Length: 329
Image 1 (cartoon, rainbow, N blue to C red):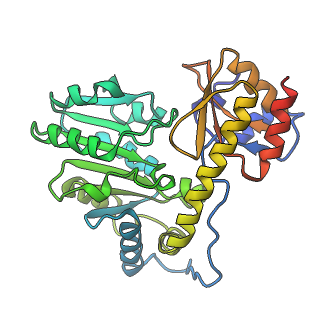
Image 2: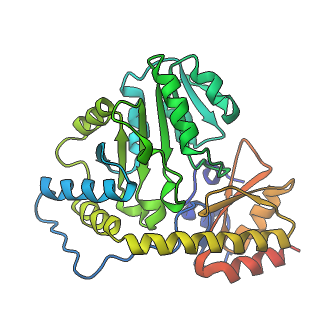
């Protein structure tokens, strides 16, 4: 298997080169992005001929804050990936810790950070420093209750430390976010992603919220035009579409249950609280990946754990995944 396909999801071009005879179009289950994208209403106007306006940015931040249930400091970024890559420039308290398993970018974001298991978070917090984790987590979908994370953050804060929570998948799961619980003085920075839940990853929009000085520094680094006019317009309209979000959460949970049942029929026991993806552990994961890829179904393998596969929701491709799994015998 090419390392290209284990680096991160969405590498359809690399998969197509490796499996040139696979049926087209590919069914991409490698990213965990919502297969049911939010559709911008016809009235959304985007002026590409002028610089994005400060008023539009303020409207976006207000709409996002309301959707997150958070009235504190918030900055827009062109995708939460960039915010992660800025962390090492912010003079965060040391020592640094990254909770694993995790995104590859988490390991890169804080060079030299100690990798720790989720079970050690509270003990590590007693020593101060910075702790970076995802919640819900990728790739295993682990969810830590927000009140537990808040307690960890306050323990860190007593020692001058900081908690960084990547909530890229939190929109998909009601009650998963720590943002609504935060006080202005809590030493917490939260990263949010627009593209995963709203299914529009190409818009490149994310947010940093929480601890005021960190949010202000990131906003200053990005300047007056942190995101595009398209991101401003789409983001503001989508976050105001509360009814769509509520319906979508219910739909995603129901379809995750259906996916669990389909996988179980093939002897694949899925785990994870996040309804946008499931992780399965199987001895011949590489062979299953290859057979699915030969059928034009791309899943997410892991170089460091060749016994794992992650599958996003197939959406309209459910029958195609079912047929591909059945063909695996």
